Length: 314
Length: 314
Image 1 (cartoon, chains in turn orange, blue):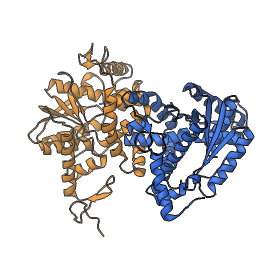
Image 2 (spheres, chains in turn yellow, purple; image 1 turned 60 degrees about the horizontal axis):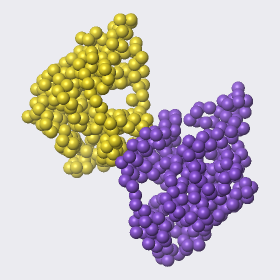
Image 3 (cartoon, rainbow over the protein chains, first blue to last red; image 1 turned 135 degrees about the vertical axis):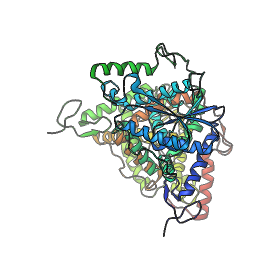
Image 4 (cartoon, rainbow over the protein chains, first blue to last red; image 1 turned 180 degrees about the vertical axis):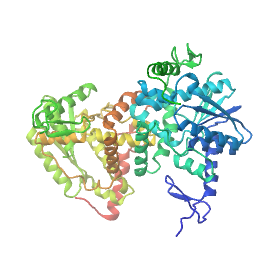
């Protein structure tokens, strides 16, 4: 007996949603996905006061799904895609091609920034103490540039493609280590501060990796299938594997944990969390909590490595 | 090459401590264990203001380890063991025998209370809505009687054998469900309230199940090896299995999670937790937060089941 779609009852049940233990057909998946994302966006007031939305795109399934679904749900909203070229040989160019193609098809303006313009690439971090935490360093680089580009291009809010799996992986680590202040920063919406720090929204924060993958496939949206070559064997990957294993034993684990975080812990922990005082970085002038921002510290580190070992990336 | 003890370097490394990835010999294990428990007791001020300590004993490895180690570490402290006979056929009598033997050998006064004196046994809960949560109901019965016996016998503080695994299993569930108020009740020391609610301490809260097992074996302390026949297939057992699986992938998971709970979350969550108001139960007069205490409600439920189906246990 062919699997039936749980929504329309049609025979073409094609995609499996493990947390719901249901099959769904292609058309219903697209509709179901878009309604769910709209629901998340409205529930958390993500587009409140947004004039121009920046969409952070990497070429992967999550950000390609994000670009597509936001354009479909909010066609009249002013949007600009932002791509940070990280200088990872082969991979970064392939991602740029896909991003250019999708933005072209959808008629979305694309802003590209190359970190190599600043004299280094992400693989250069392999010669720094950040070698074993390269994904963390890369995250800082991307966050910094997204924010800087937003400031330079009049973008007040940045949407990123963080999905439920990413979020739960980070939360698991933070709850385990008791990083109570860090925990309060993991949220669907982070308001902006002044003109130099854009607001951040995560419209896909309640969507699983599978759902994002199904959506790009069902809508025929191009995306880069391969993983970043630097991510292999990282702690992040091992943690995601662990989360999948827990989910197999506690179906709905990711959704339950996320909901508890947002509804139960966040309000209680925010009550007692101390307000951070922002000032301007002495080097670049962007907002920071210390004298020199974490990006400028990273950058001076990697530039020293480039000087000592030569350039690695492209 | 024979495994060497990591403490004395002797050849008789016999017990494996997985969270430390070390082998240890019998004599060193006993010494190591007792120092660790003393450290926990002192660190949390567990014996501050204690006149007479009640030791809750079930006959299992944890409570037998507790009785032995407390007697060894604090030989002059006034102690009374408390055994609640739950009326589980075969099992409860076997446990009573072991408890009697150990208390006799150690010269500790033993107080025994039989729930059958009140007209029911734990297996009778199988005919109530608590059927699938029988371990929870049993927990309420035990907590209530321990407290009542303490009140009747001038015991101001009760020590229980909860180990690290028990604690982490409960915490995992509470953090997952976001039970923020319940979380603040999981702690090494719970102060008493008035004369009718004894203080509670958990001297083994930082000891793993393996460590307790090794200690009773290394000291030749009798204990009941079999599990309670009612516990099989319970959610509690499945969760413990899951915790073991996580520990395999994140060595030290239990210790890290517990430490984060006590040092990071507890202080923050307590700040914003509301004070509960205690009053006297209209039925039994013991402390409760509602009109009738949860034990009296349970008891009336199970007595109705006994009336309808007859007695199950022994």
